[in-house]
Length: 131
Image 1 (cartoon, helix red, strand yellow):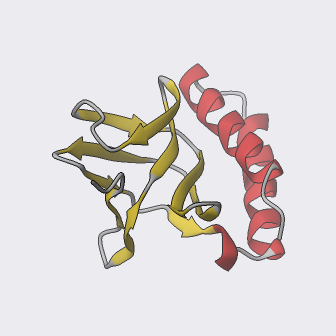
Image 2: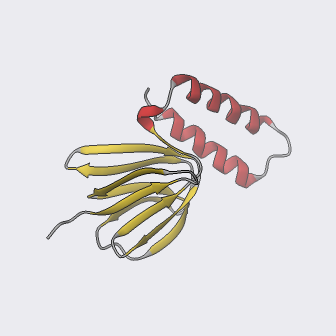
Protein backbone atom coordinates (compact mmCIF):
# COMPACT_ATOMS: atom_id res chain seq x y z
CA UNK A 1 0.00 0.00 0.00
CA UNK A 2 1.31 3.42 -1.00
CA UNK A 3 1.98 6.00 1.69
CA UNK A 4 1.64 8.94 -0.70
CA UNK A 5 -1.30 11.25 -1.37
CA UNK A 6 -2.28 13.83 -3.99
CA UNK A 7 -1.04 17.40 -3.40
CA UNK A 8 -1.85 20.50 -5.45
CA UNK A 9 -1.04 24.17 -5.11
CA UNK A 10 -3.42 26.36 -7.09
CA UNK A 11 -3.56 30.10 -7.68
CA UNK A 12 -6.38 31.93 -9.50
CA UNK A 13 -4.61 31.57 -12.85
CA UNK A 14 -3.06 28.09 -12.89
CA UNK A 15 -1.91 25.00 -11.05
CA UNK A 16 1.48 25.81 -9.52
CA UNK A 17 2.32 22.27 -8.42
CA UNK A 18 0.64 18.89 -8.66
CA UNK A 19 2.16 15.60 -7.56
CA UNK A 20 1.86 12.62 -5.28
CA UNK A 21 3.81 13.32 -2.09
CA UNK A 22 4.75 11.49 1.08
CA UNK A 23 4.47 14.45 3.46
CA UNK A 24 3.76 18.18 3.42
CA UNK A 25 4.79 20.64 6.11
CA UNK A 26 3.01 23.97 6.05
CA UNK A 27 2.72 27.17 8.09
CA UNK A 28 -0.79 27.45 9.53
CA UNK A 29 -1.97 29.97 12.09
CA UNK A 30 -2.18 27.07 14.55
CA UNK A 31 1.55 26.45 14.04
CA UNK A 32 3.68 24.33 11.73
CA UNK A 33 1.54 21.45 10.51
CA UNK A 34 2.66 18.16 9.01
CA UNK A 35 0.27 16.28 6.73
CA UNK A 36 0.67 12.57 6.03
CA UNK A 37 -1.63 10.16 4.21
CA UNK A 38 -4.68 9.45 6.35
CA UNK A 39 -4.63 12.81 8.15
CA UNK A 40 -8.00 13.85 9.53
CA UNK A 41 -9.97 16.14 7.20
CA UNK A 42 -9.05 19.75 7.81
CA UNK A 43 -9.57 23.24 6.43
CA UNK A 44 -7.32 25.99 7.75
CA UNK A 45 -5.68 29.29 6.82
CA UNK A 46 -2.00 29.69 6.03
CA UNK A 47 0.26 32.30 7.52
CA UNK A 48 3.39 33.46 5.71
CA UNK A 49 6.09 30.82 5.57
CA UNK A 50 7.57 27.89 3.69
CA UNK A 51 5.61 24.89 2.44
CA UNK A 52 7.78 21.80 2.13
CA UNK A 53 6.61 18.78 0.14
CA UNK A 54 8.47 15.48 0.26
CA UNK A 55 8.00 14.17 -3.27
CA UNK A 56 10.27 11.16 -2.81
CA UNK A 57 12.44 10.00 0.04
CA UNK A 58 14.79 12.92 0.75
CA UNK A 59 13.63 14.85 -2.35
CA UNK A 60 11.77 18.04 -1.46
CA UNK A 61 9.99 20.90 -3.19
CA UNK A 62 9.71 24.19 -1.29
CA UNK A 63 7.28 27.06 -1.79
CA UNK A 64 7.13 30.50 -0.21
CA UNK A 65 3.54 31.43 0.66
CA UNK A 66 2.23 34.73 2.00
CA UNK A 67 -1.35 33.62 2.63
CA UNK A 68 -3.87 31.05 1.54
CA UNK A 69 -6.17 28.28 2.62
CA UNK A 70 -5.71 24.52 2.70
CA UNK A 71 -8.13 21.65 2.53
CA UNK A 72 -7.24 18.03 3.21
CA UNK A 73 -9.94 15.46 2.49
CA UNK A 74 -9.87 11.86 1.22
CA UNK A 75 -6.08 11.87 0.84
CA UNK A 76 -6.12 15.01 -1.30
CA UNK A 77 -4.40 18.17 -0.12
CA UNK A 78 -5.18 21.40 -1.97
CA UNK A 79 -3.65 24.78 -1.22
CA UNK A 80 -5.34 27.84 -2.68
CA UNK A 81 -3.18 30.95 -2.67
CA UNK A 82 -2.70 34.01 -4.84
CA UNK A 83 0.75 34.56 -3.31
CA UNK A 84 2.77 31.37 -3.60
CA UNK A 85 6.09 30.93 -5.40
CA UNK A 86 8.46 28.02 -5.81
CA UNK A 87 11.55 28.86 -3.76
CA UNK A 88 13.72 27.91 -6.76
CA UNK A 89 12.18 30.72 -8.80
CA UNK A 90 12.72 33.48 -6.22
CA UNK A 91 15.39 36.06 -6.92
CA UNK A 92 17.52 37.99 -4.47
CA UNK A 93 15.97 41.20 -5.82
CA UNK A 94 12.44 39.94 -5.14
CA UNK A 95 13.38 38.99 -1.56
CA UNK A 96 15.21 42.29 -0.98
CA UNK A 97 12.23 44.29 -2.27
CA UNK A 98 9.81 42.26 -0.16
CA UNK A 99 12.01 42.72 2.90
CA UNK A 100 12.14 46.49 2.35
CA UNK A 101 8.36 46.71 1.83
CA UNK A 102 7.74 44.74 5.01
CA UNK A 103 10.14 46.93 7.00
CA UNK A 104 8.36 50.04 5.68
CA UNK A 105 4.94 48.61 6.65
CA UNK A 106 6.18 47.80 10.16
CA UNK A 107 7.22 51.43 10.67
CA UNK A 108 3.72 52.77 10.07
CA UNK A 109 2.01 54.15 13.17
CA UNK A 110 -1.50 52.87 12.38
CA UNK A 111 -0.54 49.20 11.95
CA UNK A 112 -2.78 46.66 13.68
CA UNK A 113 -1.49 43.84 15.88
CA UNK A 114 -2.75 41.32 13.33
CA UNK A 115 -0.89 43.06 10.50
CA UNK A 116 2.27 43.23 12.63
CA UNK A 117 1.96 39.49 13.37
CA UNK A 118 1.64 38.60 9.68
CA UNK A 119 4.44 40.94 8.59
CA UNK A 120 6.79 39.50 11.20
CA UNK A 121 6.05 35.98 9.94
CA UNK A 122 6.86 37.14 6.41
CA UNK A 123 10.19 38.51 7.65
CA UNK A 124 10.99 35.26 9.44
CA UNK A 125 10.15 33.22 6.35
CA UNK A 126 12.27 35.24 3.92
CA UNK A 127 15.26 35.16 6.30
CA UNK A 128 15.34 31.37 5.88
CA UNK A 129 15.29 31.43 2.08
CA UNK A 130 18.67 31.01 0.40
CA UNK A 131 18.93 32.11 -3.24
